[in-house]
Length: 336
Ligand SMILES: [Zn+2]
Ligand SMILES: [Zn+2]
Image (cartoon, rainbow, N blue to C red; front, side, top):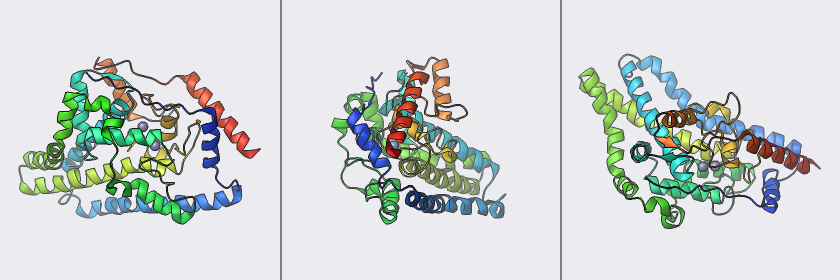
């Protein structure tokens, strides 16, 4: 049983004002309008087009290059590894949004490792540093790192999405995740990361081979449920760092540029309600408003019903109402 201390960084009133200035850098609504439309189009093209192209190949290879079996295996592995990251790595290990029984803790750490986004302790350390410095110097993956210009932002987008992963400098785990380093189960799971990578890549091929009782079944399952599934999941996770710090709605006061981007709600298991998350980081539910689908929150709810998760930090309406009021006041002050 691990006791994860919530990592909320409460902004001081003066840092809020600063954050506000950063979100509206030049104060020229006309210019901002033009720039944002350009950014938005570029982002859609970069992120969505390759996947549309991939989907477009499916009819041509259907029946021999991809089958229902491949799709089913890919879906199962996508859901398990993705929820391992969102419910486990993120909401539980990073932010302590609930307490978990030992079996659930171990299960979540292993499931998250299957996403191949790095071992649990490093992931958590990086993400806690992201919250501590969000969109400021020290943030490991802010898209605003290279400035406000379109060129700087294009560079920043790639940095936030992918480039930061290649940075030789690592987040100090002892400093940002001492609670996880102190947990023997987690240290073991963390060390066994190469094993989880192998399970995640070979597991789908074995399943495909056994279900279809053929080598070809193993090959297509490996392509779709290992390679493509991991690739899609990586892009979705990285999009939270890149897209969700650039475009979308900002209904709640947060001290950074995090935004709610609805098109990714389902694929990201609710993580694209990112402004709400930065506004109240320890909250177990990110899609806090009506009709905001949040599959991770549903999963936590199920774990709570099963008695595996306790002390779940469900959203408090009054708190979010206050954060919305604060944001509205900030907007007013900006326009004054
Ligand atoms: Zn963020
Ligand atoms: Zn977070």
